[in-house]
Length: 502
Ligand SMILES: Cc1cc2nc3c(=O)[nH]c(=O)nc-3n(C[C@H](O)[C@H](O)[C@H](O)COP(=O)(O)OP(=O)(O)OC[C@H]3O[C@@H](n4cnc5c(N)ncnc54)[C@H](O)[C@@H]3O)c2cc1C
Image (cartoon, rainbow, N blue to C red; front, side, top):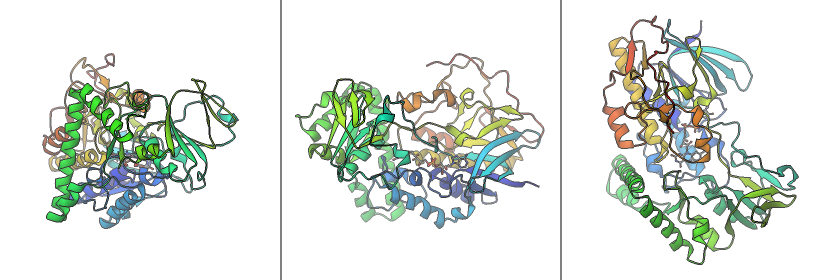
C-alpha cells in the first residue's frame, strides 16, 4: 500500500513554509507533507552563500503575512532571512512535516482514482519510493538548483585565476587582496561588488549594458516609528500595506511615464555618484524601467564603493579570457585573479518534475496559466510563484490561501478533482512574462502562456490578485469540478492552439 496524503507540498523554501502554515490553519483536517530534495530547508536562502547575500525587496513584504518581520533592517542579509524562515517552521510545527532528501522526480495523475502518484528519489541513499496524494502544491521555486547560467566565454580555459558562479560560491573563495572582476550588473552583481570591495584589492563590475539601480535606506524609519506606536502585528500590517502601495504606485507610474521615471532614476544615480562619473555610459539603460527587474541597493553601498575607488564599472563586451584576465571588444584589458560570473540563473519550473495526466506527458509550455496558480488541463495541482515586480511572498501567501479555499470548497461539495479548462476558441496567447531579461527570454518556451484577460492573465498586481484569489468565487465557470473518480481529464479539443503573440 502506498502512503496517501491529502496534499503534497514540494519544496521547503519560503513558499513551502507558507503552504504548511496555510494548510494546517485553514484546512486543519487535511494531511500534508513537504518533500524537500535537499538536506536543509530555506531553499534560495540556504543555497546562495556568496558574500553579502541579502534581499533586494523589503522584508515587510518578503516576510510572511502571518508572521511579522521584526529584524532591525528592512533590507536584510541572507542568514537572517534563513533564520526567519526556519524559526517560522519551528514556531508553527511545520518543520515536523518536512521530509528531507526526498526529491520528487515524476508525478502521474490518474482520472480513474483522482490521485497523483509521485515518484521520489532519496538524495542521500538513492532509493526510490512512491506515494500518492489528492492535491499537489508545487513550491519548488523557479530555477535550476544544479547550477546557474554561464555563457560560453571564449578562452575561459586559458584563465589562470579562479572563475566562480555566485550560485556555487564556497567559503574557500579567498578574495582578500585580490583583483576581482564581477561579470553582470543584475541584483547579484550589485550585491557582490560593494561587499567584495571591502576586502579585495579592487573590484570591477563588467557589464554589457547598464541596469536601473535605485538606492534605498536599509532601515525603514516609518516602519520603526509605527513599531513604537502600534502593537506588533498592526505595525507590521501597516508597513506592509505602505510598501505594497508604494511599490504598485512606482510600477504604475513607470509604465505610464517611462521617460520621466528613467530621468528620475538616472538623476538619482547622478546625485549619488557625482557628475564626474560617466552616468550616460554606465548607468543609463536602453530599455524602459521595469522591462527588467529593478535593482535595489541599500544605503547607496554600491555607489559608495565606486566613489571610494575600491570598485569601478566598465561597460563593454568580453572578447576573450586571457591567462591573466579579460580582453574586451574595445581593446581594453582587465587583469583579474578571480572572475565572478554573475550571469544569472537557469529558469526551471516545477523543480524538473515530469508530469503526466492519464499517461500523457504535460508540456508546460503548452499550458495556460490560470489565476497565476494552476495550469490548464492539469487537475489538482497548483504552483506557488511570486511576483517579478514585488516581493515573492505577497503572491505565494495568496496562492496558498486560494488552494485552501479550493480544497475546502471541494470537500464541502464532495468534489474529488478540479481542472481549469479553456473554453474559448482561438484565444490569443502571449508569453507569461514580458521581461526582456536574458533569464526570462531563455526560458519562455518552458513557461505556461497567458491569455488576454482573467482568469488566464497574469496581472503581476497584488491588489487584483487579492480580490481574485482571496475573495473571488471559486466556481467561476472555468474550473471544472468532478465528483466521480472516473471522468478522464483528457484535453478538450476546444483548447486553443493559435500562434503565440509575442
Ligand atoms: C539570490 C536571490 C535573491 C533573491 N532575493 C529576493 C528578494 O529580495 N525578494 C524577492 O521577492 N525575491 C527574491 N528572490 C526570489 C526568491 O527565490 C524568492 O524570494 C523565494 O525565496 C522563493 O522561495 P520558494 O520557496 O518559492 O523557492 P526556493 O527558495 O527556490 O525553494 C524551493 C525549494 O524546493 C526544493 N525543490 C525544488 N525542486 C524539488 C523537487 N523536484 N523535489 C523536492 N524538492 C524540490 C528546493 O530544493 C528548494 O529547497 C531571490 C532569488 C535569488 C536567487
